[in-house]
Image (cartoon, rainbow, N blue to C red; front, side, top):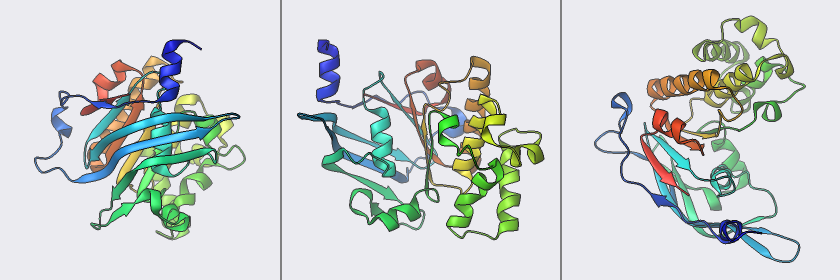
Length: 264
């Protein structure tokens, strides 16, 4: 193990940069409304012989209507941060210290690390949603796209089946999928990488969440498709005023989409 790898294993410090040049159409409002607040977060994983610190004293926030990018090398803890916020860490992980608070649209401040799992599940998908790195492994291969898009709406009982189907179709059109009927009836394996990524975006946005976490959603795509996906994300974020936490190691993507940047 190199000295650099050892340093990454034993801890990660996050530094928040000065305000990046905001995109004019999406600059945060004068009075920012806090959505996600992470304070002094440290996370460890249990190994065979010892404990490994994956995150150390991570602190940052995300406000309504802005895109905050987390950048850093592979292995620096970007995905661990997002999975901790979503409550999706592996059983081998432990929260050493710190807090994560989510501010709902109803003015409630939720302590995510100390919530009951049933309450956490009510937030996840409805108020907090995530786009994962690899859509082929994140989408269920044995369920049709239409069923997967309407699942969250059905689970949270936000509307009836007919309304859920209509909303799913509208979202597919918003992510610029032309042949909606075919895609709704298709299995993920029959779609291209770019199409699957668009389905993932639609799935994450179907319940109109306050916070969207995008974990390197364009990594596996070619440059042309990547640009289209970034434009779609930006357009949808502006339309709904959603807070976005965008995880990447690509500084070109950061320059394209971010209002603020934090570095791991």
